[in-house]
Amino acid sequence: MSQIPITVRGVVDDRAVDQLRRCAEAGDAVAGVLCADGHVGYSQPIGGAIAYPDHLSPSGVGYDIGCGNKAVRTDVRTADVRAEIPRVMDEVYERVSFGMGRKNDEPVDHPVLDAIQHADFRPQRALVQGARNQLGTVGAGNHYVDLFAGDDGFLWVGVHFGSRGFGHKTASGFLSMAAGGGFGDRVRDGEMDAPPVLLATDSEIGQAYLAAMELAGAYAYAGRDVVVDKVLSILGAEATHTVHNHHNYAWRETHHGVDAWVVRKGCTPAFPGQEGFVGATMGEASVILRGREGVDTDELLASTVHGAGRVMSRTQAAGRIANRMECSDRNCPFWVPMGQYRDARERAGAENERFTLCPEHPRAKMVKRRGRVKEGSIDFAAVQAALATDGVELRGGAADEAPAAYKRLDEVLAAHADAVEVLHRLVPIGVAMAPADTVDPYKD
Image (cartoon, rainbow, N blue to C red; front, side, top):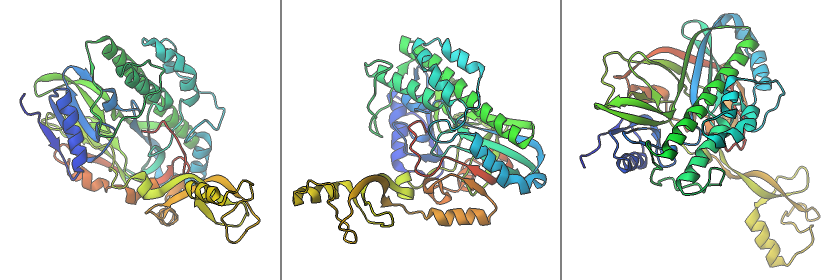
């Protein structure tokens, strides 16, 4: 077998490169690319794209099928609404649901829900009520609704999220089926460096996945449309220009003279002349970019970055939240890990609920609560203060999404400067994300 061409841009982790090569070789790929924002993901690295002639990869597309970005330029000048941004962000945070659940009862309807109800892949039909409940919700993690001051003087709206529970359950179902189970069976999370799950495109399951993936992508696209339209209504504005792309998806394309399925996980498509919206962090400028004309798209599989790229894990940045045992005295900060409490109680032979390890309140008891059991590297209070000083209205967010947890977008874009050009820089003035410590299984 001839060596598969692998292109790596920027400075990325060797483990992520190994993941990309392993996935490419397993499916006899035409080529693979790892963009400068790349880092380790489940099986296929985030920021990686692989062109398979005869396979689709549910593990490559990932759980958040159709995750992507949408940005619109409004007909409102930033200077005319700058003073209103705090009020606008309050209303955005009130009317758009972040994290798990839905916090308002505004009716949401869309033709994509009818498409799910009559899905070609019949098991998806049973997911229609959950899809209805989550349509137009944003989720957690690095998903957001932002307002930007564009370098053109206009206010821009940008969002980033995907197919929520509908896409996650679709991906989980096919990963289970590929392992011999049923669509509704629970599938154990594989190892980060697991080989890719590949489905032959001429197989029954491959054709079923293609239809199911495309429907989940349509749902993600519709969700971003719904949220952007809601923000525009809050602003009393109209869109004058729109940029909208998936970056977790598979397209049929031609590269190196071969028709292939290009499986992107965190890769923005960037064909010559094609525009893309790439977000940075809550405190730094995002961009509208465009694929350069006259560029050979084969080397990078017409792909570019989808963000700045993490340099710090979520736990390293924010610490870890888990169950712990706390003193029941209202003003006491004392706590111990669950295991330490159980061991101490067992050694003491204690059976009554008043057993405590708190030296300040021996008559109190210990109660189980969720709390921080490991400190993170980022002081989020300092981040919030800095953002406020810079004029950014932040709603929600947490240390794991702070700028220090990411590379600098300008640096990763520099590694792709031969293939894409920046059209607009968008400076954040309003950022809305899920509250700190939100647990959401449907993020990417």
